[in-house]
Image (cartoon, rainbow, N blue to C red; front, side, top):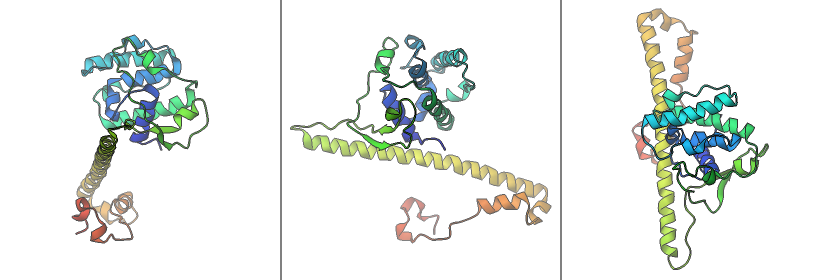
Amino acid sequence: MGESRQELLGWLNNLLQLNVTKVEQCGTGAALCQIYDSIYQDLPMSRVKFNVNTEYAYLQNFKLLQNCFAKHQIDRLVPVESLIKCKMQDNLEFLQWTKRFWDQYYPGGEYDAVARRKGAGGPAAAARPAEPTTTSARTSGAGAARRGTTPTTAPARRTGAGGGGAASAAVTQELNQMKETVTGLERERDFYFSKLRDIELLLQQAVDEDPELDKEENSLIKQVQAILYSTEEFEHPNNLVPPILQHRHA
């Protein structure tokens, strides 16, 4: 199973010195171009457009990425039409594949992302965190030390006379991060729930067209329905269920 969205964003921001907050932002193609530049260091970064918001500009970035794939004989189709729509799932899957490719082929050493994108209209270096918060289980291969950390996106706390205000700002930043995480989890939940609902509707349609299917005890439809409608063996007391879920346990 690939890394989570937060792990991927932490790795990407640490590698490229950016402040990408959503996987969907990879749909511009700019960050993806620079990830592969960190491996081969031969992409024309002066032609990569970071501060753009049109699909036409995104396509120009992806043309550069496709040229890189062709030059280095990377056997993977770049699903440009899907990625430029900036949908979470399409960009998440491609970024997960890109991370696995990077783990295998990154040559190691330091990559000066800011210097490489100078002249490309790219953003300046994002504020680096004081310390990493988590360590990945991967420690082998080139560049393992850098791959193994997932930095926070909170800026370093200021010290001095404004210490109290800085602490409050740090707490606010942490709360905002938590809200973003919850929002992302809810979107992923809704995405997979919709897939299960589509499966359920297909099963119902098949049974409506051929009622005999529902009478076969060991049929594929019965087995799928058993999975769809299975429940946990325990119950949550209402006082332990978050309010947003209590109506499901009523």
